[in-house]
Image (tube, rainbow, N blue to C red; front, side):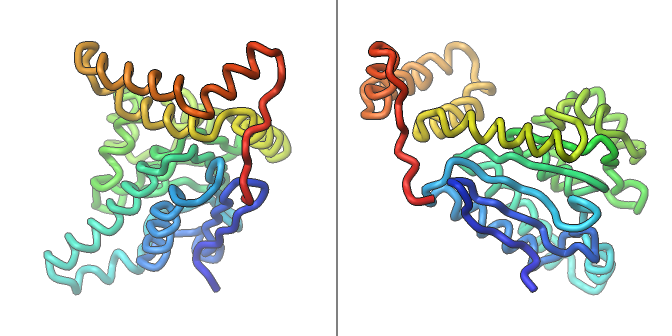
Length: 260
């Protein structure tokens, strides 16, 4: 059985964590598969990634049996293992197309790192979240740089230090989640988001995501040159010219959706 299932459907790469008996807890195989999937996503003719989990929970964090077994590894082996997890989040963070994530059940520990590298997150109203590492004598070390870019800092201090559980509406309030509702409404919301992406120029979406990820950390002086280059490149691109012509002629643009 694959610990991660993935397939392209209707121009989106659907990725499902598939260890339902373990609440989709991370193990080395899952981490490796997710890393490979995200690394390859940029080279596929897709409009986005849809990430979800099979079974009762999206992801309960790291497999505790695997974590406990690491006591028998050397410090160097432990560091190398942790770097693999970090590299998986880097691969997701570098994904050029939007990542839409649907969560339910438990979202604990490292699973919150997946939310942090997602562009849009929808959560079932009963979902429970927790940075549970401190409860186990650990620390949310690997996910912290990703989470701190997404989560409002006053909440990150509270929830990372206490390890307490919080609900979906609280997760939305602190910036980790965009939409909270029941399953049917979430599915409708995701279909709406997918439809919006399909109305946009695929190259423009990738360029915009890259722009958002880089310009937010630049001063206005530093941002002047790269931001000016991006809009100039989009204006003269084939896609940009098609979009402008369609708007001026009041004709809808049929973007090339490829074979996905």
